[in-house]
Length: 309
Image 1 (cartoon, rainbow, N blue to C red):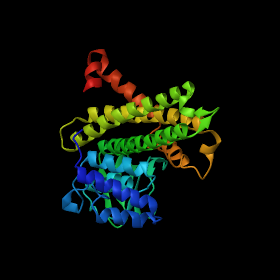
Image 2 (tube, helix red, strand yellow):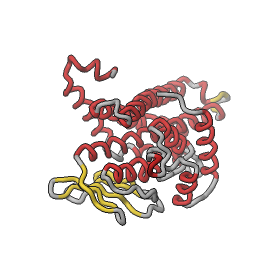
Image 3 (cartoon, rainbow, N blue to C red):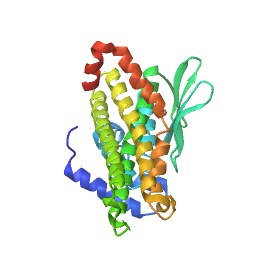
Image 4 (tube, helix red, strand yellow):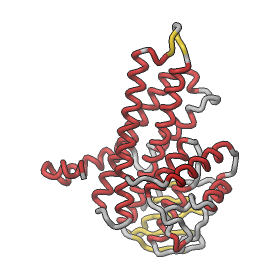
């Protein structure tokens, strides 16, 4: 992945630190982000967006997750705005949610946004897929758009999980280095050292997989990467995120004990979203199956190239 502009990095961190300290309605928070160009990073400048790439979006989403700040960016920018543009409809830049609805009316993947003015729906009807948005219109899209909807949502969830896991690890490390038992810090106990190492390793693996997927998404956006590569890299990232989340959350609660379950402690602000995110836009088992399916598709001769890209 290419390096981010230091000014962009410092601005994003400052903005989300401030938002974390404020108690604003979601819609007002999104409007503030929009005013400074962070709410519609992926939207092209021709439609009033920032024209940025996935690398910038990933940093914003991860920072927001670490600050436990909800933004509406996934629903409105990554999914709804993109769907409207894919369908040839007007991206009117309002705060929207987005949802994928099956032929039976069942919600397959829905991103609800607090304070949203409406929802852009992607649904199957009469054997074809249609995008529908109130006050904007309807249009037919391809099955590839449906797959990309799921891939984009899964990538966002993987990024958010990375941010949450990093914060969980920081909270756990702080706890074991400041608390004492039997006259010495908890961090001196070998069993806890192993737990911390396990969580750190799982988080680092997920971060590496997510960074690779973000780089692939950025290349795909500019036309330099095939869909098969995008599918595999995002599936790997989402699979790693799901397995890591269950391990890191379990280890954190085992380490903090009862204090980690209280409302007053910050831990639940990261463990609960991390587990919820791992159930959205496809389960961990689903993405495990996608990884396995892609490996089977290329066969033994193509497996190494699939892994290393």
